[in-house]
Image (cartoon, rainbow, N blue to C red):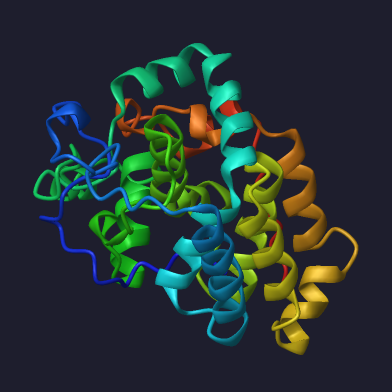
Length: 263
């Protein structure tokens, strides 16, 4: 349903996008276009898309299969999302600079200790608190490998790395209800098939009490659909430059409503 924060990816693994990577220097016959790229022919891509989709249904905690399904089915949505980023000033800057939401040790710029020292109610503090509450690390997000175009691979990587920040913006936990809410939001934001299928199928696994809060008038489904369609694209927001900004102001800037408080 969503890429788990627990994966085999280690902080020292090669990054998906590397400005120093030169495909022309690869051995003859190697058609990789960026580090970790795993090219697939049409048959392999279809086989992996179907196989990973079935695996996601059987074992929604398999983040490797969720990642593979998202990468092998998302090219059209990624192209549209990339175009949306190019049409936005901050989105263009993100595409040009290709920041990574990873710790300094993992090849990014995030200093978690510094975020923990930020004032309560700030974006960075809320993000650090979220990671600490659930035992997550920004470095646990899997590296994209099945998207052929390097720029689209970065768009997918960026989407993957801001997922936890979407949880923070929407005020959602990581239980099934929280994940479904975030996935519906991301489905409207990105158009990725994995988000649509994850949101719909995940909703079928909700417990009765969660289902009532999800479906009731003014409930979480209505909130997710309304906010996902009305909010500005979070992938165009340069989180790394705004850790000090109050979370309430970030929500207002992105036109994200306060989440409902339903018991």
